[in-house]
Length: 370
Image 1 (cartoon, rainbow, N blue to C red):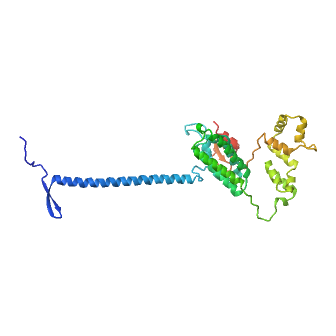
Image 2 (cartoon, rainbow, N blue to C red):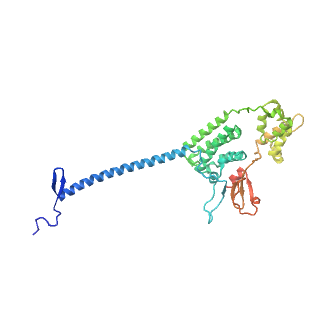
């Protein structure tokens, strides 16, 4: 039969000290007290851990938000590489995988510092204009953001220096027209990013254009010699350095004396010969649908002299002008490195100058058409 008494292996009784004295307790009561105390302690630790976890999560979220706001508020500061030369690879090899794109080259090359250099300013502006016409959808999201940052710096430089106002206004107009056509095709994913972001950028473009319209050219405060104080021969010599006929027209509107000099036939003849070839001029005459008498009346004055000024503006509507830059990007055909003119790239050729070619802005874009 089973044993009904107390098992000699049971833990027995124990004494616990209380305020009233020593009290005899059993093992079950002791276990209950311990379990309650441990349970309460575990609950307190669990609540403490949960509170710390929530605090840490909220801290991480706030830190990420501050970092994101910091990046959004500091878009003017480029966070990409600033390099004077890059290696242009068009295919995968054992040493290099992938290829260099237009957006990557635009990000890595130092265009932010190039706009501060007078020699490179026109080059960068022309490159921005060509990208705005046809290459903007091919840029990555970072490159498009970089494009807008550089454009903002260009506008700010023009507002500060009060120079090159008309080319930048034409650049903004070209970019706005391109964006208007691209935003309408957002269903085709032609632009990277949210549509609201691009609408905000288009508003910024209109604001920049308005700021350029309201710019007031300050007259110099110095009382020294001015252009009108120079002899006429020196004034003509200075005018011959201008490569845009619109600048000559604007200069002639300053005062009657300069207006008479800007009508010089030899001045406009040299301007036509600089930008256009004889073949282009002959083709333009051949395209005229009128007879010879009307053509003669359009291009020849009453004295029988050829109207070079009219010919210049007529040819300008049909052919592009000749491009001339003080400093350009160069490409080494030996080591396939793209670099600025005054920077030394690590070329391994015996005669680096023989394998270096200058790149116009359109040549720079064509370099990545593959």
